Image 1 (cartoon, one colour):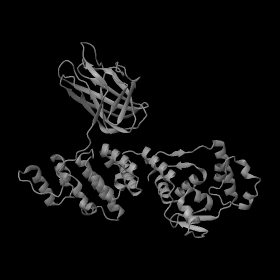
Image 2 (cartoon, one colour; image 1 turned 90 degrees about the vertical axis):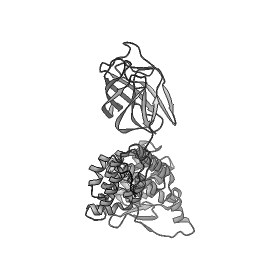
Image 3 (cartoon, one colour; image 1 turned 45 degrees about the horizontal axis):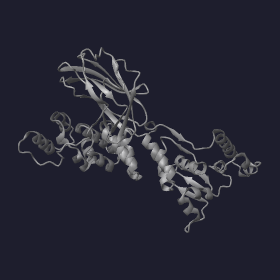
Image 4 (cartoon, one colour; image 1 turned 90 degrees about the horizontal axis):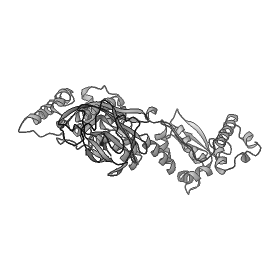
Length: 468
């Protein structure tokens, strides 16, 4: 897994920093000497550490009193790791069965070719030291080791790490891995991201790394929030990557071969005719008969039978959080003057903000230009300049970001808009500090970015449009 997809995290339970440092210094000295008799001859090393956890920690990756060794890693990349059967058996039922069960074998050296050495050491560090040390490039392999040796608390920590690091860039890869590891909660979280941010996920490099089964499950997905042309282009990119993995020249014929029957999961007849004519029809991936039949399906009254699904995907239905209980207008009451209307909000579970619902003119129909923006701790996450038409009613009018923005729970974000158009507008009243929308609770507070009067009690940005 590419390291840039995840931040590095370290989770260290109760031991004090000074104790942990002294343990590491002792281990380093012992391992550097690489002399068990010297270590054992050390005067009362046990007295240096007040707790059993700290004394156990001294044994981690330490030859002193080791009664078993592991040769970890594939051929050509192995590492010999010392172990202590009692400590390992206390930490893992698999090790217990291996060393003390009815079928236990008295082996001095155990080969483990299917686990990477850094991940095996990460697991042992948890067993010996009660420390969870996870980083981006080893977390999946560590999860594999924790599953293999039935170390459930470490496995859960790995899954939590992956969930909090989940984004459109890595969701497809993690979907594949979560199915392999049988982690239904992680699988569900991956689907939430893929559905809501489908176009970003499909265009990510990680999408090209998934296996065929995961590709088909994504192409079959009814709730993908993406244009079908984007789905088609992503499938071709995957097919090219699959050609490279199988040492095939990425010709049009080979790409079609790699896609196989999965191509019929792409709902090509639901594309806009222009997208089909300028894209899929000229890609070369479709046969002449398929191209001709799809053109006839678009245009002919007597439509041919197609192997492709002709029903558009449902996508996701956007939800709206309305924060005012009423709206009003008065002469000269609300003017824009190019100033910023802004509000802060937080949610109690992950959602994806797709856009805002805005008021319009209170003096008849008018067109507005809106600069909309989302920020987290002052850092812009998304912004767009867009025009919308107001019909003069007190309704709200949706404006959308290019892509839905992932919003994490229990963190305040800033929603802002600068409007240019008819000066007199409707505005919200009787604002609420907390709004329940289905399973999501929104909290609102005033923003220091607001220079035009919008706050919790009244003003603009009456709605947040989101997927959950």
